[in-house]
Length: 443
Image 1 (cartoon, rainbow, N blue to C red):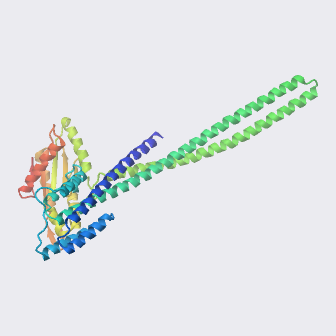
Image 2 (image 1 turned 135 degrees about the vertical axis):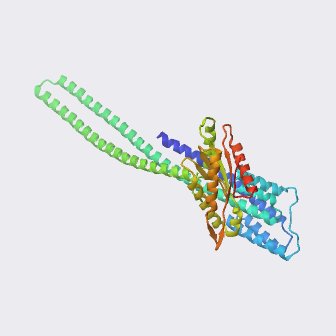
Image 3 (image 1 turned 180 degrees about the vertical axis):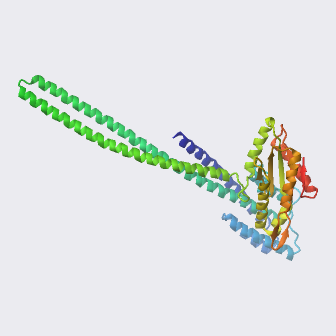
């Protein structure tokens, strides 16, 4: 009972947190829609065709159109902007060097979406925002930010429904247990009252018999009185025994049903545990590549750092980045990019040893933790992995595509913090990129 109650409280707390998160995302969506409306108004008056597109986008935004419709309108708007630019000598509207209020608001929104995670897609949009020079680029950023908000909202809704379902199952189980205990309590009270009545009846018969015996003067009369009273007592005993047998059958039947239900609940609980374990595992696995995700890496990284002051074995972190991955995505599409990521992840997994760890921590960034390895042998491993990736063969649309990776390596120190160690590896990775890519550099 206490374990079930703990589950119930846990899921209630989770439900409250998710409802608060959903409210926050709804607020973010409202801010985005206001920004879309203001940008549409700001872009009016340049060209009639462009005005028509902006009016349609603003109207869809006011009626709270979904992300798919807004995306279609944004694509149509982009096409119109390109056509207007090509057909007319009207200069592209550019932003001044200083941030406008709209740009600052968009940046603030994206920073809240990123929540300090520089590998979050919103962080990439912040970088693009600084380079956006016209309405089209800014509208594209807003549309993609809206897609992020929509995705977060859908995920929260799915999790909320799942939590509500589990909470309903737990509540039903608690109600069943409460009903059984209530029935048992009622049966016990009924048994106590019946026993008390039986005792009172027998005692009453015995007192009346004693009084009658004391007043009897003839042996025949006395015998008749005793027999009559004994028959009444025997009748009460027989009735009481019959009621007790019926009650016992009821109790046994109820107990058997409860045992069966408990066995079912134990089976369901085991399945629930398995499902929760699977979901927890899924939350730590990158769905595209099947390896650990950033959250799982951060947990393992924190463990390694915590053990460093008393650890006897060295640990080296390798930070990987695919070279020119954006070109592959832009030239051959995201499906081709996904295939590359999956193949590279499989190559990384094949290279690690039993106690090593590999994870995808960003779009095209991976990280490894090599346990019991100093920096020199770790660099040998890193170059072997780099060569294995370079040896992969990809063909897209009949064209061979060369894929390479760069690596920054650093050995964890006894007094290391997460940020310091990561910055060293990131700095080494930057040098590898700057010096021609397809390199492994140690820091």
